[in-house]
Length: 202
Image 1 (cartoon, rainbow, N blue to C red):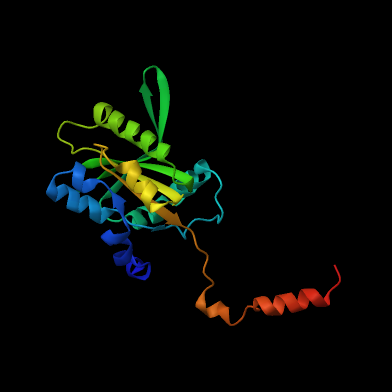
Image 2 (image 1 turned 135 degrees about the vertical axis):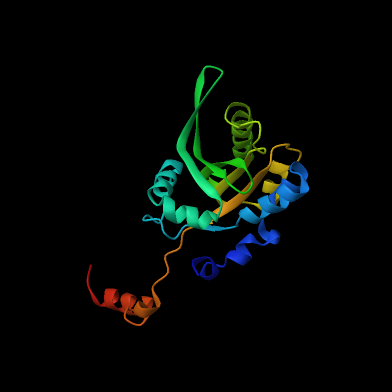
């Protein structure tokens, strides 16, 4: 019921998605991978509205991990937050790491509380290479990356994914605060509030 109300079918429709799955994954897996990506992801369950920093967004998602897993869809298992990797003597941290039980692969989820920039994809590509080399079991399928950003330009996103060999998708997230139907008639309109404020001296 939750998925129907949130417009799951429309958000999974291929028209709005930006991925390179068809070019980077074999046919059966690429089709399933397309089905797990949504655009946009609805994060209405978060307790804060305007998120300025990635870490705040990340902490909120982990705080509400059960609801976030419902939004991601069936098959996702949460592996960890700020998953540590040591590469070349330096420490790196994946925002959120999942394992998808149907795809049999790790899913690296990078969060950006800003508009998509091409360099975000370079970082995600780096993490996918590391996960495939360090964590992935030989029987696992290639890891998939999802970049979840505040907004994106479609042309920039398509160029960012072009010619890359790692499977990735780019999606936006939306946080909306709708007024419950039963309260709409009880609350004053914007016009009423403006009239009330004009009548008072500040």
